[in-house]
Image (cartoon, rainbow, N blue to C red; front, top):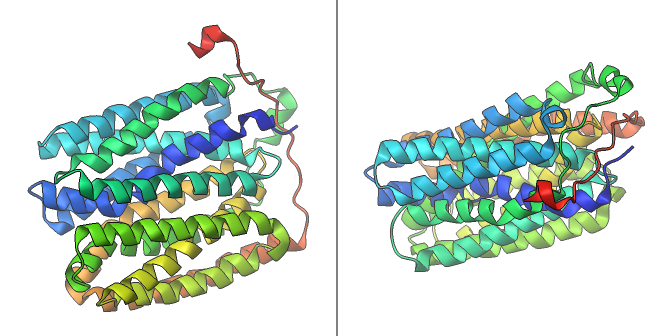
Length: 395
């Protein structure tokens, strides 16, 4: 039996809180570089550490959400995010900032693991995923428009992530508490289904995300140093780009499975590769804005279909979490990879290298999508966890 539909909006909120840190990566890394005594490469390394911590949480918790309880894990993750990012925002000491970022990253990964596991059990995981992407894109766009007007310093984007965790906390009362799974459910969950396809998809998503975030992590510097734009202009471009992503995700949600999985994933990745080249070689506002807007329009569309593909491999959500964690590993390596490549070869060469990598991984990802589309996937029965509405536990 599938999870109750009443938990969908709390899951969307958790998805938004968990994914906000990666979406704000350019401004987080840029503010660490300008607001603290860190070089661009060191700031990129701190961004990578944040995302690596998030990925570690996903790998550790992929199979434990039901056993520990979605509500308990979500509250733990939100608390870590609030304390970690909030503490890092309030201190100028580099060691304390790094520690706070690591703690906050683990909290983000914990929240994302809960959201991914429960979304996979929804009747329509793609719809829930697109709603989550809409939420995080809208919130991140708002932050990009606001942060440049709040003065210098590294704390503003970190504080935005912490405050989001605090705002989402009340919704955790709608999540199920821990329940004992039925014996047949335990036996059904003993082995991961579709292991080969899942491992291929996880490996590809690691590389796919590494490429995306190698560019995303240095996009702010491309706009500032190569396209010679102001921080406010770069922030406005990012906000418009994320707004375009909202339109793209809305369209993807409306289309649903009509296009299948292979075309959006394979074809979309190929077009993203062209956008990466354009963004990395931008020298003025028009080329920078065109590349960033086109790229950010397509990125969440393809991501929503990939997450839906991972969810379809296992109704208990384990492949969704594991593929998401592999994606976080690639995301974690992205800022440092982009910083090193751009420092050694320049932004345009970096973009060409990244585009080739995207085209290579598009082939096996498309093959997995085609294989899943040719045969029905078995439905895995999971125990229903009653949503907790009692005031005692909600308090």
